[in-house]
Length: 253
Image (cartoon, rainbow, N blue to C red; front, side, top):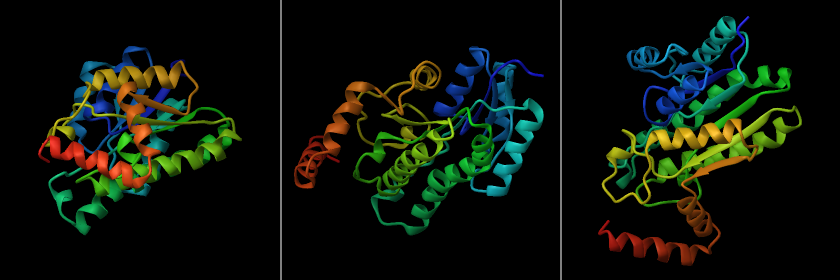
C-alpha cells in the first residue's frame, strides 16, 4: 500500500503542468503526469522518480476514463486531480476562424470536462479529495485577438464555480487556478508586451501553496495584476472597452 499522497496532473509535458509535476514530486508526492507527448513525460521521470507517465489525449473521453482507471490500479488513490490542458493560437484569432475556435474549445473546455468526468464518480463516492481546474485571467472578460481562448477559459471558470456548489456537499474541495501571464511555449507565441509575466516555477509554487496550505476557491497570481483585471471585470462595458482600446493604441496593437 502506497503511503505517499497521489496527484494527477494533465498538461504535464510543458509549462505550468511540467513545473507543477516537478514541484509536487520534490515535495514527496506521487505524480501521475498526463499529456499527449509521451517522450516529454518520460523525461520528467528522469528528473524525479516520483513522476510517473500516463500518456493522454484529453479530447478522447474513453481514454480519460482508462487513464484514470490505470492510475487507481497502480496507486489505489488520487488525493488531488488538477486539470490544466490548454492551447491558444493568437495568429488565427486575429480573424474569425471557426475551425480553430472549435479546436480550442475542444481541448481547453471539453478536454477538461472529459477529465473531470473520469473522476467525478470516484470523488462523489470517496467524499474527500480535491478537483482543481486551471483556467486563466483571460476568462474574466473578453480580450483582443483571444476570442476563442477567452471563451474557453470563461466557460471553465463558470463551470468550476457550479461544480464547487455541487461537490462541497460531498466534502470534495473544488478550486480554480487563474494565472496571469506565465512564460510558456504558448505565451511565447504572443506578439505584444505581457505585463508582470512570471516563470512556470513561480506559478507552480503559488498553486502548490494554494492546493495544500490554503482553502480558498480561487488561486490567482500575480496578485497586483489579477486584482487589476478583477477591477476591470466589474466596470461597465463602455468604460472597459475604452480602457482596453487605449492600452492597445499605446502598444500599437
